[in-house]
Length: 284
Image 1 (cartoon, rainbow, N blue to C red):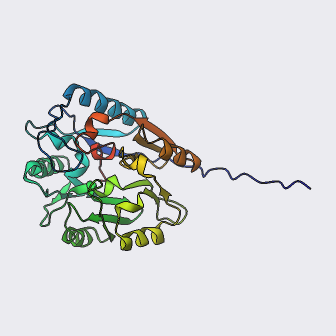
Image 2 (image 1 turned 180 degrees about the vertical axis):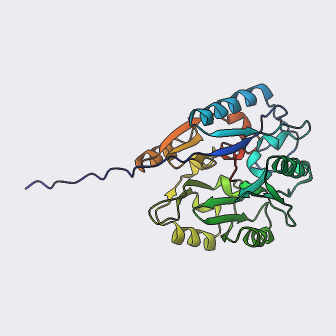
């Protein structure tokens, strides 16, 4: 008798309305080196960076997002990576305090924007690089350290927001921010804790164990997709905007019932950033 194998339909995903902050890359270039992706000796094309960013902006508008903009400032070529500008939750904006002097002025610039747009701003004491290293998954904040944000900033988060903050240690210099090694896929899965995708080798053994315990159903991404910053993506719970070249990750998302949307940000990748780097979520 022939065995009948029942197919399991992917989970029905629900899109959540998002409000985000972005910064047009009018001054983008690579004029210094503060991460392994940056090579100042190689030419960059600002106009191409703008066109690629505009495509990302159009995708977000097409998904129904509310997109707010901060004015770019000459001399701050990395300001396009808005995610590093702070972390917002419950109407509070925890400001950024950058590791490198080259990016230092971005912190006050973003805090000024937060103040003028109705957020209560908490100025940081410890070095941190905003949503680059802080990711909200359900009610839990995953917080990265190892290269940029100081672990002391995680204590500031705990006191400020009263949420569970889980420290994760990054160990691979190519994945120097948490948002290059983890993608938040949804924030309200069946257990209420949300789910993620991640690159195991980016983390210390202890942190890998924590991730596996908290997210046993996480999507594991391969080296090839991570190498084009495929994990540096942004999801509304159903639609996931990812690097167009992360084809394996794209298929994994489809298999889980998500709708991946590929975008080419290859010029901005020269500065070490991708989709999520250009996207700061505003939670009022």
